[in-house]
Length: 166
Image 1 (cartoon, rainbow, N blue to C red):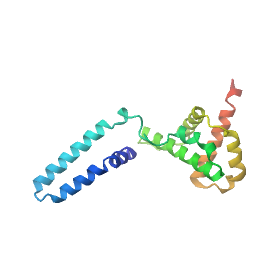
Image 2: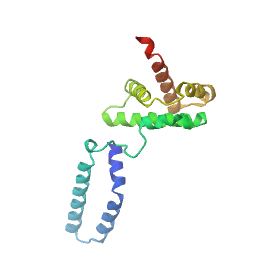
Image 3: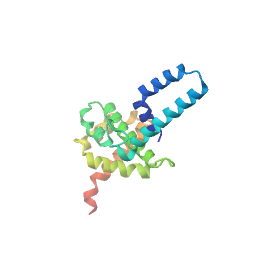
């Protein structure tokens, strides 16, 4: 929800600045109150028009998780590839957080979505990319990078064995 509000406010920044300038010129309390009410009503209307149901997505204009991971082979260094994976994982976690704002998504929520995203995106050279990162960068991973890379590697290994489970 926080992300949705932030995106809406960013898109209305010019109107907010105009409101502040107009508001500062007013002297009477009744005029200020009326102006605030008008402004809030216009924001409520904008929120109703820009609701999740009426848009193509909260992250419209920004790379989706699938689009992000599809660019993985464009990066040359293992660090850059890990950053790409991290951005994809962050996008997935943000979307999972939006889906249920009352709980924090865990691995049980994250991994199936990660597997789905990888299957749908089908990035080129996926196995060699995992091997490249594991050979040249794994010992430098810490914190969130480590978690995302380990989940990513596990998801790739799972996808690799799907045909064997028939």
